[in-house]
Image 1: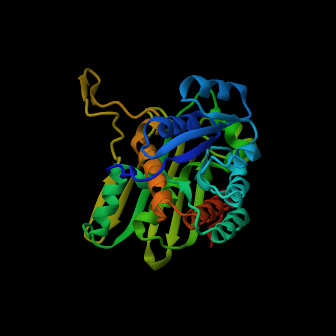
Image 2: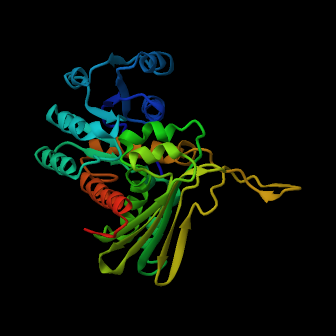
Image 3: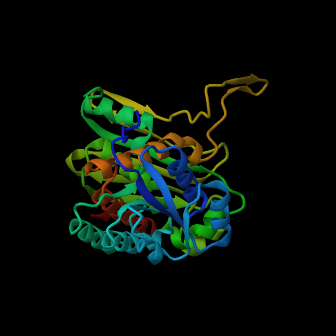
Length: 346
């Protein structure tokens, strides 16, 4: 994917809100790697995050208060990398302040909140609002999408997709569990979006989910699991099967398979770090991508480039708020199915 030509436009002045592990990556991309973007401000309530920004980023205005950043008339857009529970209100506030918005997934953990954001965005049609489902910008997923659109595998009717993170013995996901929304809204939401995207955006009809705690017993307190499986029935006879894990020994293992009436496509079946193969007394193997940062480094960059281009052109790029609402709707249904042990009809 080539970078858009934004040379004829003034730089898009962006304020990044939230400088955690993913926020740092986004801020560095916007500061140094996205033509047409200018990192104008950063916002965080944490001293250590602002101190990092001073050392790692070009001079940018600092804010501890989000409302103060929104009052800055020299900010054109906000880039939200904040806790999921804050997303909906922060997007609404940004749109009302006249700012374009990029927000990391999910749009919200609450369906009514998603719908409230959509209503606000409809009142502000001149502003871009995009949710960060970056797999749509990964070169391999993009190539698979283009081949499906060209009819290479006939009519696609099934997706098998997984998001599997390397095990963290320090228990980050346990500490994150109170606000994550559970494994299906945190991890599988990406697979849900990919499945709908590759299958032509069908609506879901019924879902079923099950899970287990293999390693992280602390998740039980929050009704969460560290490994989950799910089936989603879409309209027009389309199906999806999902697997999510927080306990992979070998690294981040993310991939999808699309099955059609005339063939199939697989993305990431072998989660290789590079093209090196090691042969020794243990056999022949390759090393795995350790984290989702490494696996989707290019995708994060390309989605940032696409957002800037979308603001300049006025044309939507990436996942819409409506796409994000549907992903939340399905993710919430999977969580209810996990809790009840019953299939959930949408």
